[in-house]
Length: 581
Image (cartoon, rainbow, N blue to C red):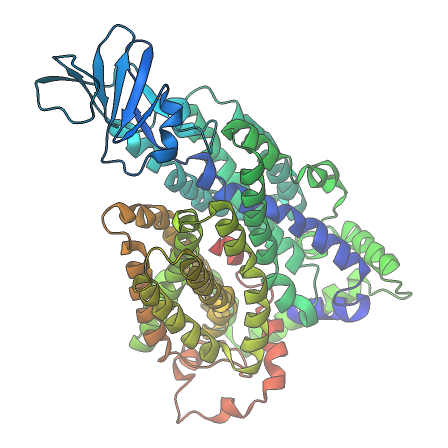
């Protein structure tokens, strides 16, 4: 299909006014995916808390600080290991811990230290929460603390599991029913489920609705990437596909802004959900892609879309569907005569990615890079609110730093090469993880800057891995290679929240794991061949020989041909690329 598709863009323009409108309308809604992916950073925050007490309080004591209410004590609260002493109006004195409370048997003068007998009770009267920052979160709404703390820690992993399932389901539906219909459904689904989350009545309904929200959000991100790719020509495809993720990063910035302005979780969720409402109201105007219409033999509809593109782009003589079909039939016929392997893509399975030692080593390395990229991306993002200082500003900066990283990735991968860009940024991200461990904890600004640098480096490496993966494998297994790599990246996104929770074991444990994985990935990447300026391979034999010094004929291809390589890639594996989020 490559020659016929490129003939279409040569006639209508690779990124004309029509493509620009479709592109920016589609990627605008990608912000909502970034919003919902990171919404739990503030929505599920656990504030300071202690056990509730049975009665009305007359005085409160915390070390040398005394007050008439517990709300006044939160300002001097220093550690979760300490307790609060309260005296009730009936004279009883209670010591309040986070997950238990003790009643002093002898009610003497109110003092912080007490060596007499105490009776320990469970938190039967609920909990008292610090509401100085957040008036309400899902943790305070349903008391997800102490023996229910694990329920709070499952909120983000279950969401990421929905992301995994949604990408698989909606990617397949988009191939069967069309990109346009799935975009309609998932856009409406994000709005409906996003609002519904705010009105859930218990924890379990909250998790279920969030799971459905994750499925439609992931589905939109998958299909939107395919949608814009099928409307953009080869000359603008690399930059257009890369910057879909930039709008995802803008969604993270919106989360930080709304979190700063709204401190009640359900109101916060509603505001996040209506942020992209304008797209939901007008997404029905988006046309179906001509490539999908042609694949379904809907030639008249395809011609109408092409004619619309021609009018918007001010092209007087647009190409005809009959011309595209004749070119495509010629390509298929020549392909069948030239290489029978390339016409039997469906016969290959995942075992072909391990057909020999060279390909198997390549597959393991590529999978590791996908996994590491996703793991590092979410560890840096989810951990940003725990760096000290202003957590809202931290998350905003972590999102903002992605915007230039994709520009750097686009330039570097065409100037330096895929491998020569990937290696230094992976290793640099590992070194930054180690550097952060040696920064004193009271140097908040320096820690935040180092985390931004780490997110920048992992973002550059993460941004180019799809294209590099597609170029490393032959035509007969290219889609399979990209799809399996994106599945590994989804596994990384599911593991990332659990990795962040390891801060309770050791504050630097998440960074240590990301650093080890990034360093290992960077070292293994050295053994991968460079693909810049080289033609794509069609068979496993050619892919195996790629990169060997004795096979130097392919290295004579000038860098200017890298665009032709992208042309050959265009339709392989596009359904899975953006699931790296």
